[in-house]
Length: 127
Image (cartoon, rainbow, N blue to C red):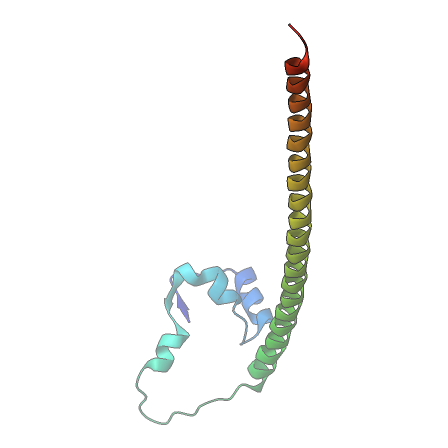
């Protein structure tokens, strides 16, 4: 990679500590990156070119993959737990709704009996 600014000793040390597989330089200095390694790899080759297979990078990538798989597994478990909780809440809501509707029906019946009973008393009393 070629950057449009001069890097400080601290920035360079951070890149070196990260190793060849690190994305620190790309992430932190993307806005100043002028020539990208990925672009150079796409260009045509001439002369004697030797591909280098970086086993350290593969190990790093595999470690990251394992971490991502673990995070994904934990997230899937959390999602399943959340969905189970949602299902329980929906069942509870249905129960409460049924009880509320039953209570409303009973209340309406009680009001009707009281008002109907009063009317019958008024109509049965002599004037």
